[in-house]
Length: 377
Ligand code: GLA
Image 1: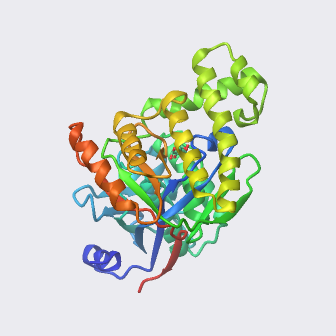
Image 2: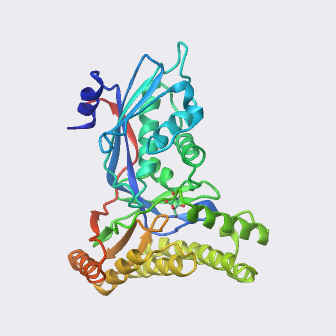
Image 3: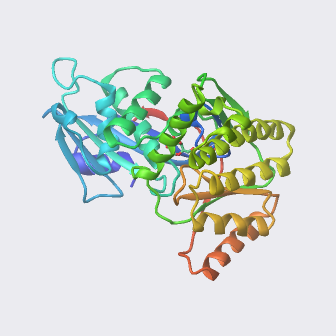
């Protein structure tokens, strides 16, 4: 059943609009968004769809096809009170958009039915996909227009202030601005964005390690705080503005390692864009692997499952491999030469079996398009 049919089955009415938005993998430039650096993510073809329609009882009613026994129903007027669980990502967006609930121009109430096809807990930004899809659908129902930058800002605010995860803006930015078969080079200090053709001759294999991943816990926030403290210590606006000598001059060994990652990762992004534009895939792959090592050793956000996947992929001939996203579980990516994907997948699965890990899941790494919204059907 499609999301529009689910909506009819749930509410007895036709949805007015269906919004959708993609998950993502970041190719390189990890943990640089909140450090004023640059990242190079692609949107995936896995998407979350949200069917939306009005109600007349002033309530926001959320239903998820995947979490069907966890419906959420709250008065729009009570959104300020906050919420726990998956519903907070959707309710937080409605809250952050600041649309009037009552009155002649008010929403009057909302039904949202969510079909999330971005694997959750896999570090593939299922939350940003949900947020952006909700924003697109709700704005269409309300007849309000916002720029994509304003939508990014509202979704980030929902995640930071409503859900309480202190993430940056990479995931929402790529969800809103991605182009199929392109990567998006985002400069978080200037706000500049540029699409770069992404057509590797082999495959980008996405490996969901199945190691639980969450950014609401303290580790992500701790990394961000250490970087902000290091930037203050060095007197730079953004840590990504520092150079290697400055990073090494930090007295605190933890801050020094975090800063080393930020500085070396920024240099790798520059080199990766050069390699990409020159079609030098082995060089691009080596930079990916360098990024993984830095995230493992200096930023300390990798876990055994990610390291095992990366090592097995490289041993099976991948040009490069790395964890992607926030870390602490989630997914890895491997860039393979033409015809090399099966060997990489088999090697990773065999390594997991040998190490006694839960079998990983392999996903398609094709580069998809941005969030969109349309009338039902
Ligand atoms: C998560 C966050 C992003 C970004 C990455 C790490 O995906 O949501 O804002 O910080 O981690 O690059």
